[in-house]
Length: 409
Image (cartoon, rainbow, N blue to C red):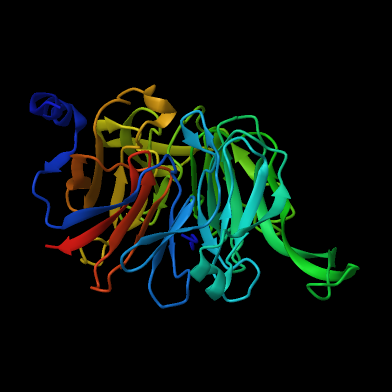
């Protein structure tokens, strides 16, 4: 699947109850660099200015590598302790060879793209022009994924809603012909019209029946096709015409209230993908060992606890941070989710990675940052940021926007 990217006593007590195998001195070390402080929680990594270096895109700014100097990108309003944006996705929307940004919002119904002003505009610090891809008419949006669902090598924009009765929709990128007015010369008195090809998103309704907090994309049915898990169950992709037929809905759980994203992967090597998930606004990270399906097609599983020592692991991510050829699970505490009103909401921020021990069939935890100064937001991004061959981490949340540079073992 391709995804476009306190006291020591209290801590010891939490670890005792968590079921995790802690590693106080993990084999890989990281150092944190704070880029800015605001409430923005979306982030991506892309070469914005075509200099061959990976820049950071995060909310109002993009940060030019290698020093990560902030440059303006867009204006975003604040709202009730949040920034009115729920994710950043770098993508060349208009196919001009320059990386743009797609973004949605919690309550606003428009999905927009922001056009890279290219070399001169970037040099001058111009704001990126905002374009509406679609007015979805759907609000209460928890988060988004940008993933190729149907195998055509074109990603779809997938929206998860905390409103469990919202339909589940994917949005397909395309173009439409529009008529626009323009001045043929700067001093022209009369405007003319012309036809242009404008990027748009077209609605693809996968199911009218259920959505809900939490989302994962992957093959859970075993047919090689991408299925979608949401807060109120999961949708099974049909054998053909996936973008035309309604997907089969399975109400195998209710009120999951899970992370966005959760992850799907075969952990134990039995040929059946498993589900790695976390409670987005409570304590607990788990994996479900999928053991089969019953006569009605409902999933059967055994639940295994990964960690219960901190709350609000609102996003999960896989990447090989220790260079052993196997991906590690990366997550952490979303800082002030629900403005501190969640269980454990006032506890210090943490970021961890977890090795999968195939022999013991469990995850082993290692520290990335436990200073209390770095947490996660809605997205976790990884890439080799400094060219040393090691995988680094980029995070944005209410503790600030950070890069965590991998120092190796």
